[in-house]
Image (cartoon, rainbow, N blue to C red):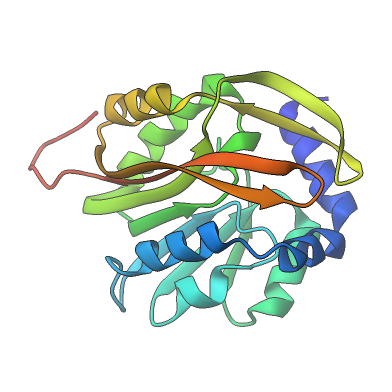
Length: 214
């Protein structure tokens, strides 16, 4: 199976169990970062969330903003639509989905790029850069250690694809895509069944210089 099929099938199979697991494992790190995300994104702006899952962050991100959530899993999107009715959710693969240039003021991605093949990171960052308006921000979590493309056969009871880079490589990839880093930190938390885990949390800004392109 291709990575996209493994990820889709895994989250479809998890269904409501994934949202229950998230609620049972509230992340202080994620909550803190969400506050840092919301601060520079005022009301009336356009926000895209990649890998929105069951809509955990959708109510906060959509408050006073025009929000679009994207996810591979129809099962997770069904939960998100019930969790946050009246909000726009779209089924799609963040590696291949297309939006018009300069469509968004912010793009958010929590715990999703660790499901993206390593070879797709830089091209995806470059596409997100085009979707953002000048001065817009990409705010996301990334892996904090180099992980080759691999499949864990039992992650929360399902096979799941993972990949990632170390912090320095993540920073270089974002710079190569045209971003300027405003925040870049490693933050550690505890996940049930996983123990202590560390992610790389980033706020990266598209410069406002006219004519800039990666």
